[in-house]
Each structure stands twice: as C-alpha cells, then as structure tokens.
Image (cartoon, rainbow, N blue to C red; front, side, top):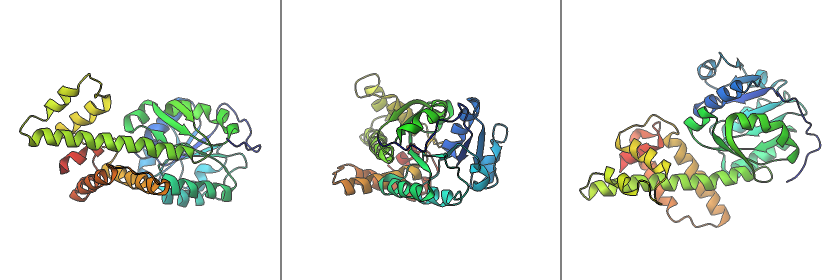
Length: 293
C-alpha cells in the first residue's frame, strides 16, 4: 500500500461527518455516537437526518457538515450521488481530512472516486462494508478498507464503532473490488434459496421442507434460514432493498466483463431480480425476489 506523508495522527476522538443517513447510515450514526465520537449528519432528505438529532448535530448542507471535520464518511446510493455530494464539499475540507467512501460503487465508480479525491486534494480510504441493516445497527459490519497506511490509526475508533471486523486489503479501490466479489456470492445464495423453495413448491411439496432438509448440515448457513423463512412468511421489511441488489448485480456484471471473468449464473440472477423489481417489489427486502418465482 502507498503512504501519504500528509496524513497526521489526530485525536482519539476525531470529529466525524456522516453524509447519508438511510438504512445503513442511520445505524452507523448511532454506533458512532455511542462510541463517543463527535458526530455531524447530513442527508438529502432532511427528515431522515432529523431522526438522529438526539445524538448528532444535524447539518443543513454538505458544506456545514464537513467544515472542520476530521473524517468525512459517504454512505450513499451510487457513484453519481457520491461525487455530486462531495463536489459540494469542495473548498470546505481540511488539509488533513480523511474521506472514507463506504457506498457500493463498483470498479468504474471506485476509479472515478479515486481520481476525484485527488482532484479535491483529500486523502481517500475506500471502505465499503459487508452487512445490511441489522449488522449496521449492531455495529457488526465487516469493513473492507483500502487506502494509505498512515490513515489506519486515525480511523481505528471509527471502524471499531461501526464494525465487528476490519480488513485492510490494499490501495484505495481494492475494498470496492472485494465488495463486488462478496456481493456476487450474496446474490447467488439469495437467488439459490428462492429457486429451491420455488422448485420444492412446484414439485407439489411444502417449500418449508427444503429449509428443514438442509438445516444444520454442510449446505446450511444462517443466511439460508434467515432469507428462506422471510420468503415463506412474506416478511419483506427492507434490510437491503431488492432494487439495491439489482443495482449491485449490474456493477458485478460490469466488473466481470472488464476483468474477463465468466460469471455463469449471474445473468440469470439479474433477470430474476429485474423481474421482481418490474413487478413493483423494488422497495421491499431482497427476499422479495421470491414473489416473482
């Protein structure tokens, strides 16, 4: 990993500006505040940010949020929203500010962010996370951090607050690449559960028998039971929206094409996810892909 001598060791209590307080950002904010870190929050829909007014300073603009902050976190929808938001921060970032980019933006998006950070003159740590709403609320995310070595000590209290484990995996951009590989597995398992439940049903059996058959064995996993039971009970309160999974699968397919990797099942997975989104289920939890089977 490269090193940037401009990064200095800050206080053990750095001021954090969190931009984006949606499903993931809200849980992260609560854990940052619980850890005692001075916190400012901003969201494009101000009412979501106001829900955190009991524990953070709610900023009316990006500029207000980042001005004087030691660490700026972006947890937004895609690369366009990340770049557009950080463009508003131009001229308000300190010389030693660290930008922690935690949105899922893909390979092309992470390359854009790396270039944009250089243009802004700010130190970038690319650090997407593994986990959905409950791990975010529990401070149990896995942080896939990538960036300069000198930033690690400064970010330790932040990553310890939001995550149960942090991996430093290379230069900025490596974290986003690893996130795509992990999300490819998530999408494959998700659609595999839905397919097996549907096949069990269509063969004239109770689909719950599939979950019982694999329970506790080598083919089982907590995720299989969690999402499978959600599908069978029509429990679709969004931990991660189906539309977001479809967005990420598009990023995965683009990355695979660029790398020359043949992801055999992924086009079919995308088709099934898109079918469910087109049927009006995009705002529901990703388990709602089962509704279109």
